[in-house]
Image (cartoon, rainbow, N blue to C red; front, side, top):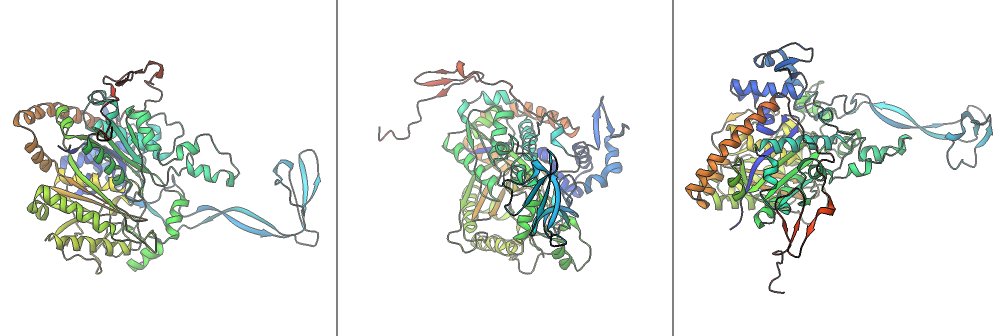
Amino acid sequence: MTALPIIVGMGGINAAGRTSFHQGFRRIVLDKLTQSARQETFLGLATLMNLVRYQDGQLVTSDGESIEKEQIETRFGEQIKAGTLIRKIESNHFDVDATHWQQKLTIKGSDDTGLRFTCKKRDLPTPVPSSWQVTEVDSKLVTVIVPDQLEIKHDSYRDNPIKAAGQFPTGFDPATMYNSRYQPRGLQATIFAATDAVRSTGLDWHTVMNSVRPDQIGTYSASIAGQMNDEGFGGLIRARMKGERVSTKQLALGLNTMSTDFINAYVTGSVGTAFSTSGACATFLYNLRSAVNDIQAGRIRVAIVASVECALTPEVIEGFGTMGALANEEGLKKLDNSDEVDYRRTSRPFGENCGFTIGEGAQVAILMDDELALSLGAQVMGSVVDVFVNADGIKKSITAPGPGNYITMAKSVALAEQIAGSEALRERSFILAHGSSTPQNRVTESLIYHKVAEAFAIDNWKVAAPKAYVGHTIAPASGDQLAMALGVFSHNIMPGITTIDSVADDVYSEHLDIRTQHYECGELDIAFINSKGFGGNNATATVFSPKQTMKLLAKRYNDDVLASYQQKYMVTQQAQSRYQQAADLGQYQLIYRFGEGQIDESELVISKDALSIPGFDNDILLTGNNQYTDLS
């Protein structure tokens, strides 16, 4: 019997807001919410953005003025909307209107005597060029004559043609929520996202950890670029070129595996599987696939699947921009035949577009095998029945698309039909498209959906594209898609692509339902999370709704087991409600166990059959791992 991987919690942060309890999803479909859900969303965003705080039992503004929840939208609604989703890059990242760079300058002396200047002796280059004439002025100063020309670099500023990004909500600063110790922004976001995910489950994490053997817990996470801020690789690479020193932390904290390490070391305390793999834009799905496979095989019973990318730096943006991958001001003005740019609409999946919009984000999903999820009374948010990964074969351009995504989509759809049936597939499934917003992607990706739809007799296949709102967060992009899928399952609202006026003429839309407005879609059973990454990193996940998942579980478990589960789940719901209320009030209480509960290795107990670790109720079994009994 193959274990079914159940999604029991999800947390994180992107340009739409907090992931838990679908806050980010709600921000996207704000105008379709009920009044109570709308108020709840504005409250959660107001505290996240530090516009409102909970103090002494009441809500107060940053000026200390008391405010009621019902007043937040009237007072701060426009500010909250303006400070979320894709927008002009804010100055805490860098100044897009005056982006700093080093410009080359060649200088010569104004006469035949050469170029003469005075400098500190310690600032002379090593070695001093042989043509330079150096004369000491005193013990610290020297006069230098350069007979020929001298090339220098000096501070300069340029108008950056790429000005928009999907940024964390304005005012959100995870560094202030715990003792972040000059950690890169991506790792700060990881701590927030992992805490949000763990607390969203409504389960006591100590109980979860001790419900299984210590080696039956796994953490699967990665970035692509690594941590490119000054505290990570960005500072490491730039330091000497800027005349600064490299710090002791920049190399280690810059690694793209560090989100895995931070979750284990500072949030969960896991000693189980640690896994990191990068697959360009499919990185979250690559790690999800490994977790799902391990759960299906029985190697893992609890999986924390994550990804983070906070790479809104001039260098990364210029790299993508030079490739022609990012939407720039000139291209957007041409599209709109206007001298003004609407930064909200820079990302236009399946419409007339000119490139993608980069974003920052951190997403964490928590999965369990079906037996453990039921025994603990965990919320069944959905299930991931499988994730398919395929490459593109021989290429000319490494960034060009290929056949791999046809394979992943076709396999995912075929599996969904085999398990849930043809009617569920044709009537109640939808696609979370990669939807990067490039002219090439809108054609190639839509053609895949068109051909798969024809093969499986699907018409009016619903398509959503999160990147229209949060941008392309690169590594965690498919995590953003999963978060939106869970939001659709929960609210029965399908996000339209409101950043486009209409579907582009070259999009293969005959079998697709791509709308420009949000709409009520009714209960849906199946979501396909699709990702097309640079280099041929293609992945598609088949995700079932909570209702469809419970239908499957009803076939595997008897009524007594399911009734017992429902009793336990009522307790879980109460704990979830308490966290949701606290989080909406900005009371996140981030988990950061720096040095807390370290394991004393001298107290490990090892026998021939088992290994006992202090702090864990269950032993790690050393026997039963032999898969080669026929060879033994």
